[in-house]
Image 1 (cartoon, rainbow, N blue to C red):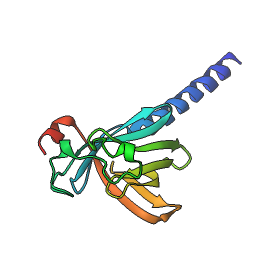
Image 2 (image 1 turned 90 degrees about the horizontal axis):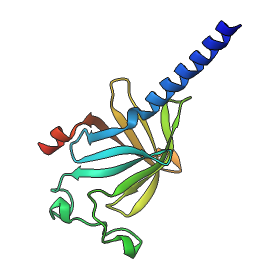
Image 3 (image 1 turned 120 degrees about the horizontal axis):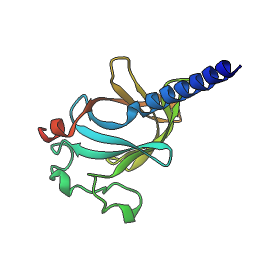
Image 4 (image 1 turned 180 degrees about the horizontal axis):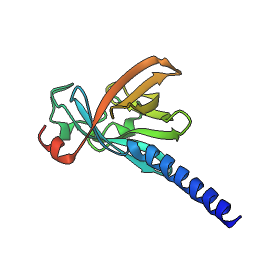
Length: 155
């Protein structure tokens, strides 16, 4: 009886540890495959969030990236915040049944709008982040590869 109890708890612990590591696979620094934006995904208060680390400064106004602000934000008080370091994704929660992250919200600084979001990691390690409006088929997907600060410093 003791052996059965031990194996039950051991199996339960291993299952929980495996699910946690799959959930945390999202954490880290990611560079878009078109190499125009880099983000860092982190965990805070039980959900997954992302902030902007770098973006291609040739996009948009042409101002240097450290001088760009959230000028399209509908909230006038937020229009002075810098794009670099800004949180653009929040609320993602891991769904172990689907092996995906759901129920997030992503911010598009170029339009000042929030969209629903979801994310998955493909078998070959690509991160697919989808921003959508009400239904997942009405939206856009961005693809990212895992990266390091060293790689980002060479951009």
